Amino acid sequence: MNWLLLRWQLLLAFFHVFHVELGERVRLAELLSIDPEALQQQKRLKALLARHEGGAKFTNLEAVVRQLFTIFFKDFPVLLQAPSLPTPYGWQIPIFGLEVGANNTQATASDAVRSGLRHVHILLPSGPTTRATDGSTFVRKILPLKLAEVLNNLQQKHLHYLREAMVITVRTPPHLVFVLAEVRKTLATAGYAVACWFLDVRGCTPADIGEHWQAISAAKAPSEAVGLFGGHQRLLKAIQGIGAFVAICAVKVHPGKRPDEPEMRLMSKLASQGTLPMAYGIFGPQNAWLQSPHAQSAAGRLKIAPSTLALKWAEHKGFLALVPELQHLLGSVPLDHRSFMRLCLGHHEGRTAWPCSVGLATSLRPGAPRAA
Image 1 (cartoon, helix red, strand yellow):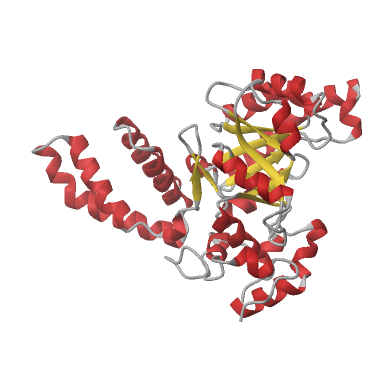
Image 2 (tube, rainbow, N blue to C red; image 1 turned 90 degrees about the vertical axis):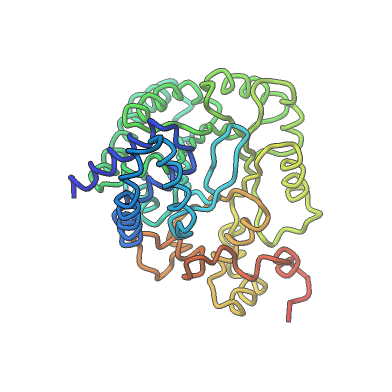
């Protein structure tokens, strides 16, 4: 197995020489997961390589590689491609991400990657004790160690080979912005990069957010994006023209929200301004929406779980979406390779959307008539 992984790592390195596009590198990285679907694609690529190996003697090698990719990716299975959205920074971010607390990241992160999730959203601690001087000092010393344990766990389970396909975002309260450099260093040591830093502004006011936003804007690297978590219109207006561009803004919404409610209007406005809208709390307050009559009825008609219905609603709306726990999604489905992706695809490879997507917001809105 180690030789197999080494061989494919060398193959990826070879393709890097020829300036392979990021999207293609991500798909190639998925072949390193060593699950049945990936192994099947490895065999297909090997056969194509054997068929094309003589062509390099008579033509430009890079042209051969490009021709090979054109053929290979034409029939690349959807199951090996996490649905994603483009960012203003030129990279893609998977639509669905898992919220992972800094204190319980080890098992959760590996489970997320195994199931097919490729966006890991790490939450830095934000309790009252972290605000004290000794508490923040403790966080600065302990947090890098906890993250190092997580990364080591991924390596032990042979999941670190997928890092090319992974996107890591980190959420911090305003008073812990000073630890971002340590977090970045820890991740970079293991070959990972932070795609976006989120400033948790749920406790902020328009009067103090400007200072916090300037601090995180100064802390980010040129290749990194910054976003708001828990943002609303007044906070966005307060930082207009201050610091870095808000690449992503996370708002608390779920399928039961009416289109005319402030949160949904904000999500539409964000998209028109070039900011990616992200939904969190998509199962409703304390997951109550999952048990609502409308959710149960619509999910029953489609023979899916209400949690899956919420995911497809977010995807149809063009939102990124964070989920707090895998158990709400998978339920009794065994946690194995690609189990999350199979769930999102309706257990049918090649199926990219559920039929419930169109008109979902209307049919699930409280008080709306139920679809026939």
